Length: 279
Image (tube, rainbow, N blue to C red; front, top):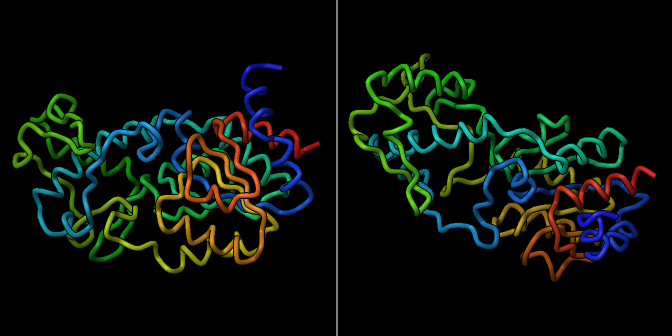
């Protein structure tokens, strides 16, 4: 038995299997599922302090939008090059086997879809799509990233944009930057993600709630459950008396409600769970 398998076993794999085996499982994932794909967990233990831009700030100032798009351009490179890890693949295999009612994710990286999961509700949107706030037209994110570089031929974006310690970015000359606008109506473009100060769309949340309501158990993986949308889904499961399994390194807001808590990495734990449930 390798080190990872021993870690998972010691953390309570058998207890989790007793809860999950034989029924349909709803899955709620957070940033911890994607850390093994090289995407940082901004809320986990030891994560750096962040100062995310609010939706109101984004709307209220062109300069703020330029700063946001500069930072988002850096982030998109990391998201665009990331590949699904063993945890994503394990959940896709469980869905294919008919074990899952679906995956609800707080992540915006699109990795569950790219891993092959079919029924995925992205609570906070997705970074690989951009929407016009005026006419509602959608654009592929890579196309907007290409336009950003085309609009700024005299700016070396690799050198001009730098990550700042507070999670924001520094830009050598933000006023000189040009940012793309909607090619249909000239409106403001925004990545199709839920900003701080925005609410999860009602239809999206109801789709997520449906996944939980149609399950016999809820598996939470890689989420500290700080965000209200995740807590609301946890509460739906609790009210329906569904057993809850939490897999996360460190404390979560769902630990006191969980039938089983596994304090371990998600990739190895989900892989072990999928293998055991397939037997």
